[in-house]
Length: 199
Image 1 (cartoon, rainbow, N blue to C red):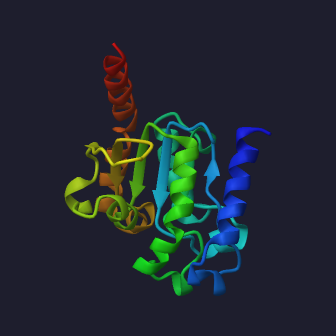
Image 2 (cartoon, one colour):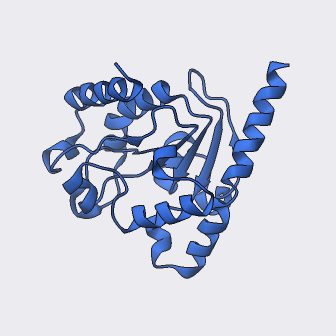
């Protein structure tokens, strides 16, 4: 079995046991998608209408913008892994609520544990505050956060504004694109830190 097939099995199993109430109103679950050996995992907040229809994360306008930003740093979707805090679309695209995030959390953690990325990039405050509740996105965006969380597969986190929020806000769009360009520097810094730790 390939790593991609193993990850698919994990997703199917988590969907079968997940008790999130959003299951009742969503068309289907939206599994994480991308490279099972990715160094970067992007975490958004919840599937939208297009994602609910296709079963893939970040395929609407925000996904298109994300692909543009990835291209700006010489990357493609196949180089990364992308998922959401909740796996089912909230009604009318409302924000996911705490109990929904809690029900979907074991699923998200199973994905992360399997991939073991070097860095987790939060897209928006919902995914960031799930892991780092003390931070404010307006202050933390574009800064590498080093935090040891017990039994967690990475110590590095990089918060960004959500592409959907930046789509129609010129200032935020520029900030997000500028923050995004720091990703290769962040990866290099993490690599250097890991190499030093091995010596």
